[in-house]
Length: 241
Image (tube, rainbow, N blue to C red; front, side, top):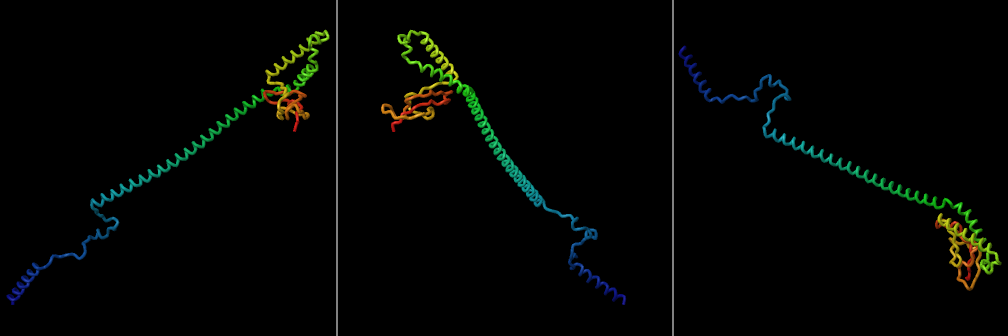
């Protein structure tokens, strides 16, 4: 009995040895994880990337940063251009206003000078109007003396009368020269063509020996003050039509 049990045990051991040499290595169906690794959160688990992925990511970030920088520079340039255009528009507006102000000021200066000159030229206008009446009286007094009365042989032996006439004539001449220095001049339009701006027609009459619209009689001489009519001459005009 003992011998049979030993033989059976030997056969079992040999069969077990043969099976051990043919058995495949042990493989786990699922990755082995320790209890601590299994309990760790997925967000805290370490992930490993290759160096090429890191380099491409850095290049992408650098390119995005460079693109953003260019966009910012472009926006800044556009803003500067708009500000420059606004400033140029303001400069043009201010320049236009300045030129207009200068032109207005020069016009004001010229107008003021003209008004001052006119005020100086015609400051004695009212005085001159009152004075021409006295000049008219001188002219009437001298025109009342016939020319033949001034001849020595026709003076009826009165030399004093001739001297008085000459004195009045000299006084009138000096007075007219003084008035001319101040712009007051007398004019006699006898024989001239009628001018309504300078003459005042008191009557019109036909005369065959004279041309139409000619001044044939001067009733009252006219006066000018610095080229402006102070008093028109009162005349008679020929009317042949």
